[in-house]
Length: 260
Length: 203
Image 1 (cartoon, rainbow over the protein chains, first blue to last red):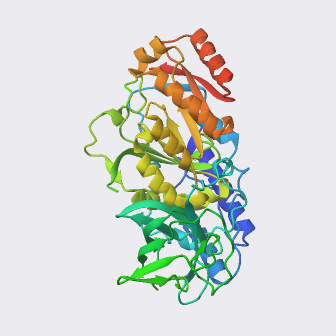
Image 2 (cartoon, helix red, strand yellow):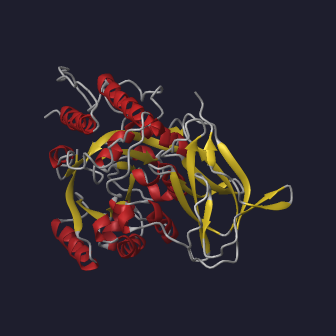
Image 3 (cartoon, rainbow over the protein chains, first blue to last red):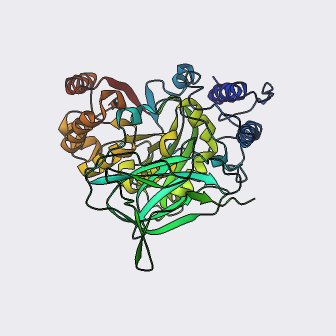
């Protein structure tokens, strides 16, 4: 049995499903390669990159992209069975290899993956469903929205990292609507917001209020893109030290400058 | 964070590391010295191995982002012993967020604190518990069975049985079917519901 061919067949099915669900024209011809295969090849890789580009284009045109969980049932146990026979043969070094006889090295010129928005997750991963993010006592939740500076469109899958003394202490990724939420103990943080294709955006020495109970209220909606502290005190509690003077958090959103 | 050594990256694993399409990222380094280790490269000096920071690995494996999202898959960390690199796992999870599921293939032969921290970011665990008999465990791995089993008990309480699969190998010259039966019974008594029994074929 050619395990690589089985894997290729499964991955083709996933690509085909993604294309069908999103109205993307994608012709996937039958593979005629006869040699050894680990399940992918330059042609398969190019189809995947094409799907990413097509999905990104859909989003730029204001349309939705459906990917999350749409092929959950397609990865069959048949393929799994081919890889797990109940016997582990010890032959010496069996380190995982970088794949395929027909594949080049991992493509270096891939379309920025973070531009290919996957859509709202149909389901959370089972692990997250069983283990929702922990809310630590005596902490606050920092939320925000990330927009594209030129188009004003929400940017999903942007990385938001909170650091103290250069070390990452918390982080989040924006969702389909560009929103993020991160729980942090009270203190001072440097925030870094980054995404492929955009300049890194930093906010240094942001003070998150200290002596507040962990209760949440919804602040009045401000301008799109405000960073809000959800907590019970109505005063603007996210304070930003600028040159020794404490200021209210009036950041009008996190705008990530696009590089075109 | 500094780059850490990996013994290999294996893409397009289907259904063997949990749900969906996964990529296996195998760390160098392991606290055990199993006689029939499948990945001996992780025990040799790390010179010459490829090294990645969390960001670099994220960019490397992210070529399969569409597959991960579409199938509920993600990255499985193995090795070697991934729980020796909890800092790395934490940073990686912050990068990949909720879209990718993380799995760890682990012997649990680490400090409890590492298991506790890993449980915050890893969605599913595949545990190589090796053996329930402490003497056999020591003879085969060189390690302390009590530590691994204690961590397993804690992990079950934290994650729930549905997120912990335990592998029970029949190891030629070290244990027997009866030993494996006893190990499986002990696991069931602890509440483990997903047991993968298999056989090492030394060749």
